[in-house]
Length: 429
Image (tube, rainbow, N blue to C red; front, side, top):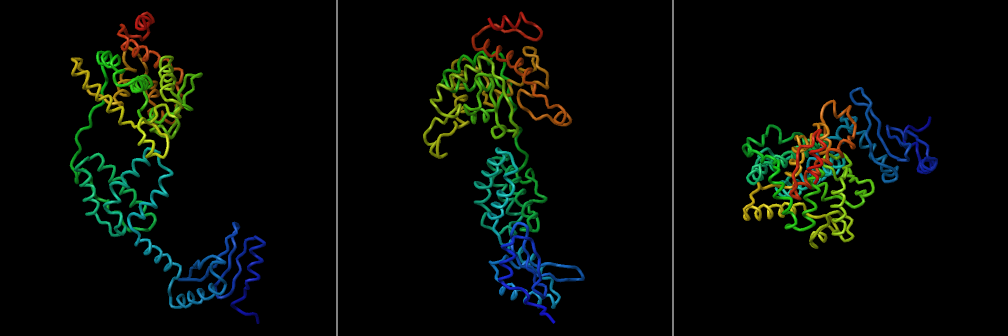
């Protein structure tokens, strides 16, 4: 009668591995050698618990030798005979070991597993909140020991400076714990039942975006050279193209097609994560050409102006967006001191100004075309069925808008252009 256990040998195993064909051969006593299609050799113990087939993985071959696998299988059989589900016990042990992980380890695993599916801007923002605000406070605490009180204390501290940031920080913590629950690192989410508004109070109403009036445009545009030629061109491009400051800041010269008069904004530079093409009018194309001269060979349309910024990024990079905010604030102060009052405005107000003017009687764009000019994501069925790019329509609308900008800058009269070619010609005189 053949032996019931210890039926395999190292010589046989090496032959099977060399052959490369999937196998599952028993050594006896439930111990089985397996070789997958991908060439992974491993040891498993097959047994029954509660009348159901179960399987315990012991490890890979040759990391775990034949002799070691037999010894581990013998110990597993002893436990099985005592009524223990060794496969379930291994799973519980793994979960308990995971529970000893610090919150920092859980956050690192969250970033590794989740960040690839998020938009670039979301990744940048969330990483900053995790690394700068969350980990310094609770990073070293075991993930399972982070309490609701810990979360409330952290959010409350951030909320004293900015309630809007507190909301973002709370979202980051909650998402990390949701990941932890799914990974069996924690058994519950301590963020459940917490309301940021209850902890920090309601935030102050957000500042409304401005629509700069014709009078303000006539004051601001001629004064732009006072904040520097590069800044002046950047402001006019933002105004004329309806784009976001971040999209222009990250633009590279490879994205600008001077022959086709188009600016391509790739996915990574778009806030929506969706690439789009911006038609450029002759005047706007010329502003880009002037910036190209000012860039002095940089790959960026608006290169960083300070050495320390390039140094901190390990090489040449794009300019700091806040620099333009500072320049516009400087312009605001100068104009108001000189008796030419305008409202304080930001780069994003240039975008809201453009959007408001597009559907005015001066321009006459439809809502659909205006929204496409701003690369807004259209909701509902429109987002599903209307895939038209409206490039021709957008170019026509932006032509009328650029005419208005040029007229305000030059101090020329401008009239409504909707269905009125005469008025349009007079605006360009």
